[in-house]
Every structure is written in structure tokens, then in C-alpha cells.
Image (cartoon, rainbow, N blue to C red; front, side, top):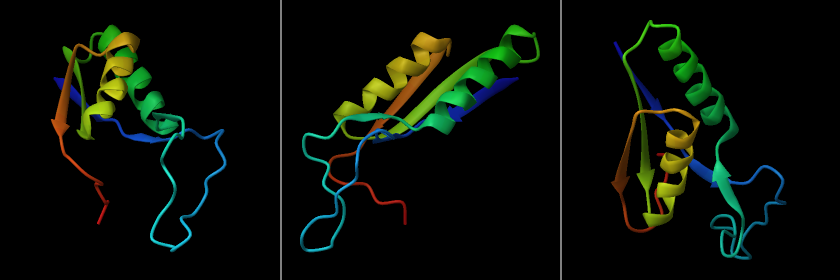
Length: 95
């Protein structure tokens, strides 16, 4: 069995979020970004399942701009076997 874990690059949870003056979104320029904390937990649990022998491979996948590679690299450092980055230019909205 292979485990696929989606990881997302988000604004760091310690950073105060600021809304743009025109109200169209949040300011992301020069803001510290990190992996979504629940995604970190998911990678760790997937690696534990693999180490227990119930899975053969852990694959981390992310969608986003070039800088989103950091999230895949972090997942690989934790113990994921492979990483997939789907590169998208511009802002990616969830809806």
C-alpha cells in the first residue's frame, strides 16, 4: 500500500495576518511561510505506518508556486519516500 499525503504552504502560525487595504485578501509579501501544521502531523503518521510495515511508500504532494518546494523537501526530510510538486504560477485559490 502507498500513502499519499497532501501538504500545503501557508502563512506561519506565529505570524500576525494582515488584510490588504482593498479587502481582496491577505498580505503575503515578506511574510514567513511554513507547512500547514496538520500536514506535518499527517506526514509523521504516514511514516509511522510505513515503519510499522503496513505501507510500502509515503508520497508527499503539493500544488503551488516555485517556493512550495520547501514543503515537499520538509516532508522528505521527515521520512517521505517521494515528493511531487505541481507547479502553478500565480495565486491559487481553494475554490
